[in-house]
Length: 394
Ligand SMILES: [Cu+2]
Image (cartoon, rainbow, N blue to C red; front, top):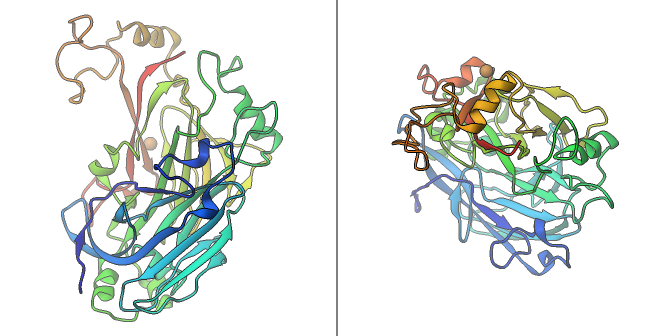
């Protein structure tokens, strides 16, 4: 093994067409993506688990971001031509593909790239939405062993006269929902419409270190054996779990009431998961790229292996909080807020008094209870993140 990098996990991003790292989702002019080449290296890392166990993993690496699990987020704008050069620095065949559905069909694929070689693929960005990229070789084995990431495609401009949505052709119901944000009795001003930067990405996965160890030893892993005998020991969101996931602001939903957020959920692992959000219900916008005609209002959704689901979290005042309590939270006289939050020590800098009210915090956790543990019983060190209202606009 020539490279054993300890990876500092975090959501790193590559922007198609951006020169300075500014995502092109804000661009309204000609895309530069067809002049930019995205370089991805396929490499190996030690992935640190929540109990400090170092697990051998494969990883995609960007030239600036370095290796990460998930790999760098690739942002593109509708109409961009993506050009990606993938270099396989491992000792076996690997590659790059964009997953098209949960059956395992690929929209585009390099096919196997032999050790030490590279391939460049060019393809038009698929319709605006959320996509998994992964190793097409021995799928889903190498995907689960670390070779996965997300491609996000944003529409170029909103549909005329309407609020911006994440889609090129939103259904009437989805368009209406986005039009209503910050602009209706249910989502009143000065609450705001959705903004693209108010987006969270939750990449769900699991790790069975026995298979990672086989990979380290260079053992050929049989797909059927893997699918039958995979026994997860760690459950991760964006490569992290437990405290490290919950406290990570890439994972957490953090903002003011009145600042709606988009949650792009993708599942690159093997189990079925049930992310459950507290404080607000969410709106299921798209399933496997299909923008929904009928927008369900739900607090839990199913994530199947290989699946992508977009959910809008309205970040509205939690309906379970009575209006008079909300008023006290807002004016700082509540004794029901998150007083004693260790992240906000000391007296209130303005009033000099004890902090009252915001922030108020809630969890998102998977309702598959197994996934809340790590290493066979450490609870709650699995799939969990914070939802935090730092204040309120409304
Ligand atoms: Cu719950």
